[in-house]
Length: 107
Image (tube, rainbow, N blue to C red; front, side, top):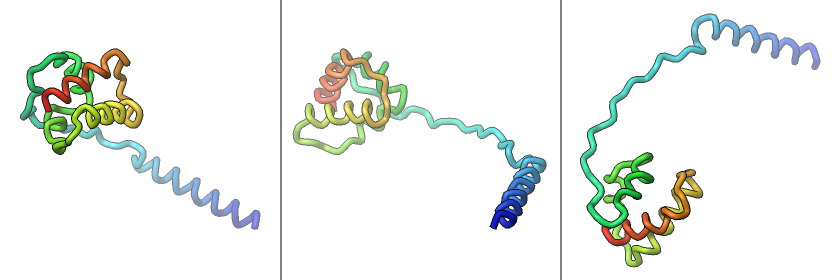
């Protein structure tokens, strides 16, 4: 059993060295261009707060394509909370209410 394990480890090591020697560990850089912005956030109070916090990760298109909802305030509060807790958005506590207020009033 020990001899078999040693053989397998040696084989894996040699295969890894061969892969590295052929340039397998070096990937070519990927160049791409993002599409042009097709939407803008609507004017409204706290627009600057929304642009400073939300535009870092997604466009206004993303916000404008959210489904219609009955309770806008509750929906947007949940969305902003999700962005912070699930996606790690770095939004100051003082800005959360402003963002929710803007989104509920304009979308």
